[in-house]
Amino acid sequence: MSQRNPFKLFVSHVWQDQDDYFRVFEYLESTTNFYYLNYSKPAQKPAGTKEDLKAELRRQIEPAETVIILSSMYEDFREWIEFQVNAAQAMNKPLIVMERFGTGDVPDWLRDRADEIGEWNHRSIEDAVRRTARHEDTNRWEVIEFDWPTEEGKD
Image (cartoon, rainbow, N blue to C red; front, side, top):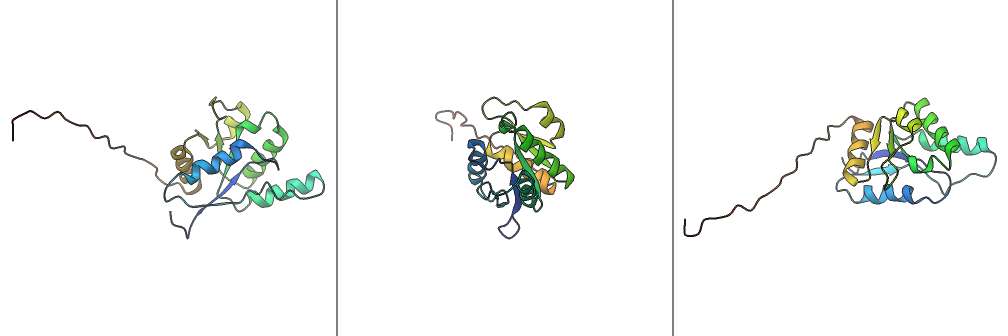
């Protein structure tokens, strides 16, 4: 992935600071050679009605290639998270639903709508974005080196 063609992301939010929202970007920033644009703008809460808020969320979701939904917000902000899921699906955006941080669980309603369930590690998030946004192969091979014992006195 080059800087000239970054992944376009939207991460669910509810117009206020949330730890998991910031945590997603901490994990993404810890990857190498992974470039993205964040289209979610929780600080840009428009004045007006609930419909104005929904219209702004649609504008933020529309340019994204994939949408990351934070399941940790579902219990307290169900209406807003369900709206974002439904809006993304109406726009045919793939959904990555992040497990609740620390517990690993995902509410059934979100699990049923997810294209992928994301775990809280930078590789899982990066790979899920690559697969859902651009259908990239994300197979990785770990190389493990062993120190083999040497025999004394042999050349």
